Image (cartoon, rainbow, N blue to C red; front, side, top):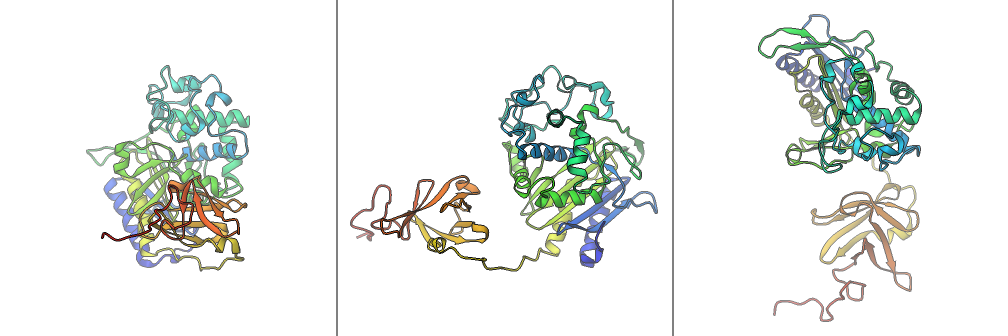
Length: 461
């Protein structure tokens, strides 16, 4: 249920409406519906339609295509979190006999398994799933197009395999597992494998004439985990809130953050576009912000879900046409409009509940050679190490409970930070992955590798 639209300023609401009106008119979509999420709740809903008086609301179903893949990825990560599998497991360990068994679970999630983008002909999106009843029908005789693990290559058969993996390990159909483990806990009552009224019909709009043709709505059968679902902007708003911060009933915050993390090598064109892929989520750098989410398309339908975690804003845009409106652009613009017009108000600063004197001894300025850094104590036992010049290697580090910290990001991700003490207990230096940080640049008497010239610092003369 949407919250009152008055929560957004009138100017913001008009800008949002204008943006989707342009998308529907210029994209020649029979209908287009959108929702904006802020603070974990839907705060705006809008729609445009070619039929007067029949604007869809947040309860009308549209087919969401490959956004289905994100739901499937959540199911797989649940299996990992419950210890049923490891992401580095080869598929063959759990689902033998596919002909693609050497590909790992992680590579399937990130589309780096080298598999073909599509199943063999005929065009699977416009033909009955009964034509592809077995995984061999989906993969074909030559399932690979690239060396495994070397590059990102989007693969619908890959997510078909992940759906089959879920079925094998749960002992139940993919749609039943999805309903029990994701849809019901998140209260996604209007997300389903088959359309449920009220739902939009899918249309093809002629590229050279303002004329329409109805598109078939095929049951994808085995390939359902790659693109079968129908949903609403209301349900996808709830799903976006979950994907932003996690929900321990389904998938915790750390695993959701893992989905946001790039997991696929980027080719040059992807670097130019600022795009990559995580575990079941597309990632894009756009307008100075990082956006995560997924797009979807099937004959007759387009869909997009876009989230800016930093801005705490998400957008869902759905349309019932095969091509035309650029929903990824529209979704990114809806997020930008809200983020720029009504920037997120930060939570109040709060001091630490308690201060560890042994950590306080370490905060402040340190030097790696001649590079100046600042070590700051933050909430939850996290420390941040940042170059004082504003440029260079930086990282947050998580406390391990034994006086050491592990890097969370950047160059120092996974590296260990520890304080090295003298016999009298005072701190000599910091050791971060073998790098020595001292209180003064090349401090005399400190354990600087290679030693310090005994004549000390000098001028040119």
